[in-house]
Image (cartoon, rainbow, N blue to C red):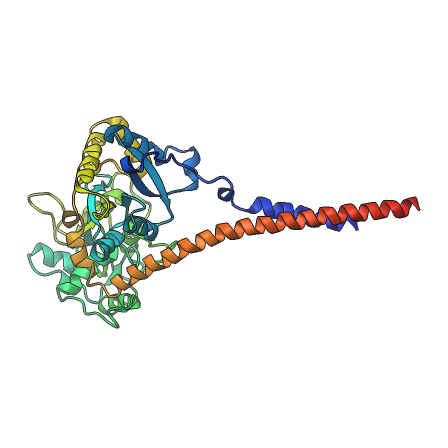
Length: 409
């Protein structure tokens, strides 16, 4: 009988070992000793920060040197937790994506101090419709006629259901300009799918995570392969550098397998701006902004933070920190209106988007509470396992004593 009992105890030990290490060994960051002279940064942490150049403590230490204040990392689990931290004064600044930034500015009065830069140094991408150069849309555009009226019935390729460049900006623009009619309840997210497929094609690609045509490259691949028809009947909604990024100097294998033989065959509707050289687009998809709540973070503090990022933009060592920690080549000093003003005007017409983002924030807030329960639950499991193990050892010991006594008798 001792064998099965030992197996049970071994299972209990394995159960204890299977509890995530973060319960016992959380990622820890330096804390401010003087809260009146402290900059607190809400930051979504990862397990790999323990032994990685990505550790946000590097950014905190450098800002502390430049600004002559203590800097503390306040760990959060996602955008909703970041919004909550700023709303209740738990953090002074935080990083949000475009949609969450717009929502928090609209509903909570948050402001933008600066923004991360994209790979080419801009704090935004342009949302563009890529088509084949021989399509009726491209021909009309080159002739100075309206190409967007010719999009009806075409197979549209999107980056994702909620991609800024690949869905929200182009569809929002086309709705506001009267090209696309909303189908269904404008306050329900499902109406976006109905709206897209009613105007374009039932075969339009609105890919979920992990599917073939997901993302910028996926949207362009959908156009390049045009597996359900002629290339001239397809549209790829993506960002302006998509073609050079995926089909330029080191082209992906799918770029030129269909009716596309060179990058010149990919045409961006709207053409190029004669002054800036950029593609005329549906609008700008903003990079992740650095946000703050003016109720807690004052204008002098904002100015000091902006000056610190200007210093970091000016030398290679600091730029390396920005790249390691934030994945950005630099920080652009901007404000709320300049960074997300036009973006908000464009996406607010997308059916269900405001309700969806609010639901997402609320759900993530609930999940954050749930994550505490998971931790406490994990601790409870450990406690139960330890108590059970102790009882087992005691009972096993008592039984061994009884067995020895019987043997002696």
